[in-house]
Image (tube, rainbow, N blue to C red; front, side, top):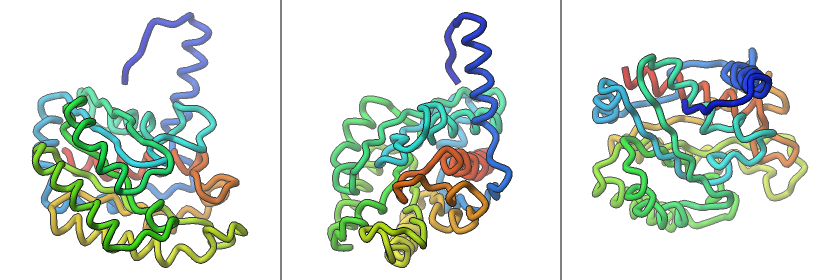
Length: 247
């Protein structure tokens, strides 16, 4: 994790925030089982063995960090910190290239340029939620998905797919009500595609089923974007599973 010289009082305040952020809520069930390596990640393990791992995080608002009360309490900074704690002596950099509202199409459109600009060892691709909520035809989603796969494979980078989130079952928002079955089906298909391609997969949809002890189940008042507890739990679950696969 990168740092700069700061006045003492500010540095202490930031340190307290980071220490708090690095701890998952007590109600968060942290387990490595939600990350499935699918015989991938060999190059990323080699990068870890060499002491430096660069990850490019692509996706929509949950990668960008919408809903977190402060930037440092969003997914990407917490994932970076969580990996560095679990992989001592390894310099981990997680680059945030999330853009709120994106579907698989817009992310696939950006992949080539972002990979060229950042030279990552591993690309995280969070996808599926907005595609479902916008009722995109599954054939269109997977055409974009496979177009992105071709770019990833040509670049020789490894991939961690992150499947859709859950929305609160009791939501009063008509746009989200009753959407979990479709989100779960998208998660199932992404999992199958990850296995077919030997891409690692974080099963976020399944992990969130056990978040009932978090504030609002880890989801903010808009019933879509994660809150601070949701981001902290998601980052810890990801770091736990990914670090275990990279050792």
